[in-house]
Image (cartoon, rainbow, N blue to C red; front, top):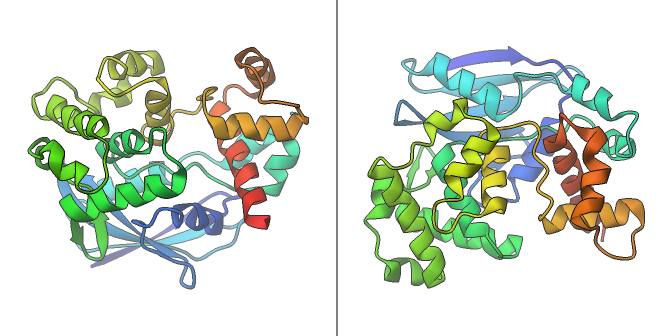
Length: 294
């Protein structure tokens, strides 16, 4: 086993990261010890790392533990991107201090965008979550992973594209997938194993190139593609205007009688670029917090 300590520039609130991760029943979060287990694929090999927070919001530090030294450096580099340790949040927060979102950014100071742990699981999760309330979406995803995926060192891995492509629609319907959603997930997996879709090369493509590729795939629309860009690839300037959560957050923020129109949302967001992804995250966080207080 190896251990590595990383110092990260503050502000960074890992306790809020754990709080958001814990909404997903597949995540192995320990609030007492401030740890989370992270299942990763490095060069197609599954590995599990443990991330533990040791510092505070202004002076954050982390202890990373893993079993194999072989993939250590690549795994740490992946973690830096997953947890947004590669770019200080202070510059992003400064950008919003003179904006309409300044109070939300103050309230949720140090909240980072945390990416899904691999591209395929991110896209599958986005498809499963389409048009479902969050609670049942998590339940359905958990059933899918625990039925067809595998566990290693206490962490859950999604089934691979090869495994999912071999499933029958009836197997997914047995865990309460709709027939159509089952077709979408199996079809996506077939596209990947047949070589028609390479998610890894999307790292180097523009947002529009990724969007154009994904929306050609059956079952993937703009909302799913935008969520993949944001939570899969970590693109900084995504603002999903069709997202109901963002619409509700803006309605509350501006005291609107109804949800804002697409044109109004476009107008509000002009000054938030080039960090629209963070505007999205903090708007989501603002209504999550309201729900917690009820």
